Length: 336
Ligand code: ZN
Image 1 (cartoon, rainbow, N blue to C red):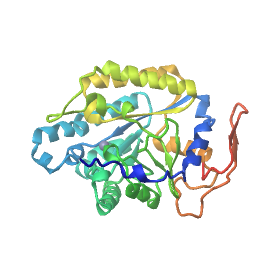
Image 2: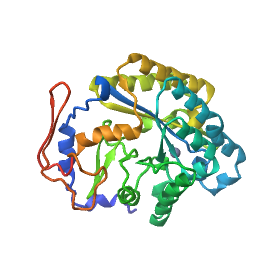
Image 3: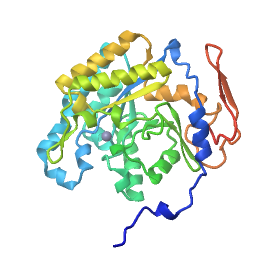
């Protein structure tokens, strides 16, 4: 019997980017969060509505109950979340697929009315790893067009639908000039996600900080039945760890899951506890990106680069924190 294996089995290691990651692993940027805060916290929302079901296949177009569950997010979830953030006078970021924006323009209107940021989240939430390059481009372009058609400002940030990324979509982020991306998981600090010549200002997420693995449920696959207190405790533990390290933490929620009563109660409790702790800066993703950008790149560099002209090999970047400590990056850093 012939047993096949990964093609990498017979290939020589490609170490072209090893040095980049080795250098970055040693870096401990001084983030200098505004107001002398010790941690930056973003609690962000992916407003998928029915597009999450669309991405599971056309079969789901006939599954009206499943679609109605998804619609709950824009009918009940978003209004609750907006009210919560209004009570704390906080702004955050909503990543909205183009289809959702076109079909529920009132949701976009209410998000913008409260001063929140809207990010790009594809058009119909296509899993990019299952899509052709042409479809990936269409997802990107129609996402922009749809948000523009309902009056949203051009998004400065992107989060991938479905949790996966490809070389094609990564290249599209560069081509369309996004300030930041929130699709990769290579660090729990803001960092530079590098693929060849393309460098993205990355505000990372992770499955463990996403409410989908906790609360997601599908008729065919079942789901988890963890208590919402468990979710809140885990988010709080991550918050404390991030605060101890003076880093950022990025929590991802979906209005159709976290907007449900007993879960919303825990979301409310989490936000109240973070605010009461008085040690957190709670910005939008764009605000966070603008703050960390000069700490990751020399002043004046673009957030997403890859044209081969702006590559910053040999960069020595040094900034001084409020407390007099210095950030130092040196050597062959390829842009960090
Ligand atoms: Zn999504």
